[in-house]
Amino acid sequence: MGTATAGRNGPAGAAKTPTAWRNWAGNVSATPARVVAPTTVGELREAVRRAAEEGLRVKAVGTGHSFTAAAATDGVLIRPQALRGITSIDRTAGTVTVAAGTVLKDLNVALAREGLSLTNMGDIMEQTVAGATSTGTHGTGRDSASIAAQIRALELVTADGRLLTCSEKENPEVFAAARLGIGALGIVTSVTFAVEPLFFLTAREEPMGFERVTAEFDEHVAENEHFEFYWFPHTGNCNTKRNNRSQGPAAPPGAVSAWVEDELLSNGLFQVVNSLGRAVPATIPAIARVASRALSARTYTDIPYRVFTSPRRVRFVEMEYALPREHVVEALRELKAMVDRSPLRVSFPVEVRTAPADDITLSTASGRETAYIAVHMYRGTPYQAYFTAAERIFTAHEGRPHWGKVHTRDAEYFARVYPRFGEFTAVRDRLDPDRLFGNDYLRRVLGA
Image (spheres, helix red, strand yellow):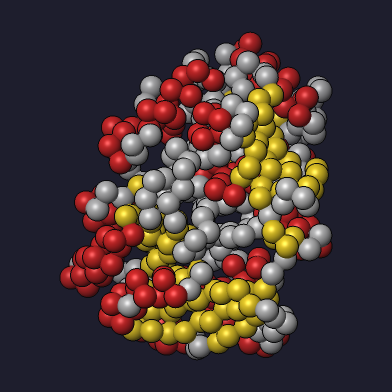
């Protein structure tokens, strides 16, 4: 991905010749007035103060794994990757404090080395801690929720350059919002997560027909700590995955099996067939039928991040909506019927996951048991017709779009589907009345 240069120029590390920033998928770009790569929280605070004095807006950007323009700016672009690493571990409290620029992959490896783990995580670990939590990155779980829901405290630099500490006891109204703040409340510098002793998960992956998995969906969710499945459009085929805690010992996939499933089929061959499908869309249904039968059942046991996450090297654009869990099967069946009767050619599987209700103001699972439907299109393939049709279905079921993924909703819509929307905007009005951390995306989704 193309990124802005981060040369040093003064105490806050301003770049002399910033270039256009582009996100991972390549569908969002921005050309900031300057780029700052602070190496300390003090440098970050100074960069914010200086931008405010000059009338420039400020946005922090992680690794660019969002598909929206949440981090885009024509002002000062903050690249916090130098602020990384675990800063403290409290084994008695079961918490770990980590600098916000830490990449999740590095955090997971470091935690495992300490005999610790997050309870749940998403399936990609290339994001920074701040980027993942601020946009609502989640995995799937019957009882365990998103990464943001595992936050016990955080620090952020506010529009006046202050460093504000938030938790359930300290600035609780800010904490309720800032765990998933979309970059609207300030720049997160530090996050304290709840962690637990390292444990094992046994994963069972199994092909299953669409009719069966949707008919048994509630049963699968109830019986498994973590359940998800993928439906292959243009077919009646799905692949299911159940992750449950295990006593161990570790029994990871064999080297050959892992390479075939995770590299050859999920990345290498998948890249080839998507490229073919983009060039010759008429081939996609036949390819989907073959691809959906290529994955076989397998069972393996390993530590959490090696089970929850997997490499995703085939680039795509994604839309994901959170629905009331009781609506997801109906919505998915409507989606399948729409694809079946349309001229659309969809080469990426549709992903379905779950989450328990949480208490974060703008979490997609705020206040309700939730299930997610994610639709994808290969990068460079026209996606608007598919996403528009899918979004029409999802919004009819009171869906809430993922804050970091493609959608067309605005503040008026969010005020209807988030009962606590006004709480968030009130905190924003107090912390950033002049919209120092604003941009066009936040104007659309949060209002002026």
